[in-house]
Length: 484
Image (cartoon, rainbow, N blue to C red; front, side):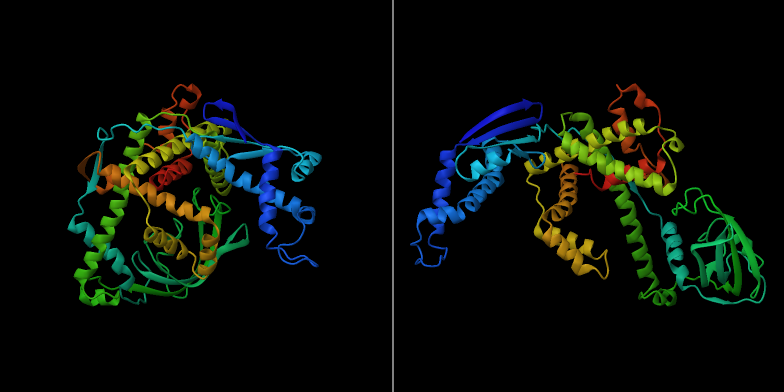
């Protein structure tokens, strides 16, 4: 067998493999010899069928198996021998000439194929202890816990019927039916809806127009949906709602005590406050981790520059780009609306894709060298958490993962990455800094801007592109995972 490298350019490799006809014939003879004791041919005792007859009946199919075995196993063996990792599944090319293929299956011609792939670059991980990050920590005051506990307790607040006109803070029970240009729209109607005036739960302006209403009143409420309303077909549209007020109720005093806690299914008010504090700490803790992870990724992005496999970048870019197009379509907007052009946006998100791939490869290398692994228990927990997101379809989702190893690998990747971040946090310098809630929640420099800064030589890219929703999503996604 001849294995010859025909391309070695950057990360790109191409290998030509030639298996002489004699070798193919030898492999076929072994298979025929193994098959003679297994096949049953009429008129012949087991193992006594003539070799020529077996070859005539099964030669081509067995040779096809040999070809498939070579294509399945040889690329992996070649990569191992060369000490290389392929970034994606190698592309295999072989003859498409039917006559040539027939000669190969007949054992009359050499079998030749080529494999093309991009290698995962060799990454030399240096000393990571020099990385320094600031961890923003929120010290939650008791009064903030009390305010949040009051919000939670709102669902248990008592209301009593009120004869007079509705005021802010009162709860009204209403039937309503909305229309745009005289046409009803999906989701625009309800009966018996309970609404606390001033809560801000309905479209801006809706609740204000019910101030002063009494039980039995009918009102026409006119509002304009916000420009950024999630339902694109309603965003920015003027709507009219026919509202009938069924009842007006006034709110009772809200006292956070054991009696109220029991209405919420808890044993005491103290337990309510404890749960609220834990939830707030968890929420702020997640934000803190996002901020710290961003600093780590930015530091790694600044310190490590290497070529990235183009196919991985293409795949990551396509994922990002398809989501961008989907978001724009759902919002009913264009690139011009976001003060950019499609070409400029493509350039920016291409850099973002390159950054994500590079960071993903780097984190993988750091994790491997540190001995980071994902246990089966961790994988199973992730799988069950994922399954619980699809109530009523649990078995179908479970079967999907069981039958798709790649899908399971997609569950493993984010767990591995977060464990690598944990390893880095134990290695690098971390300085805690107490901040306010507002400071923690303030948006920092987003991932897209960071990717742009890394390619400052492209002057056209220095023009700011809004894409606020897309940029925010990109930032949140990086905090959850680099995309690898």
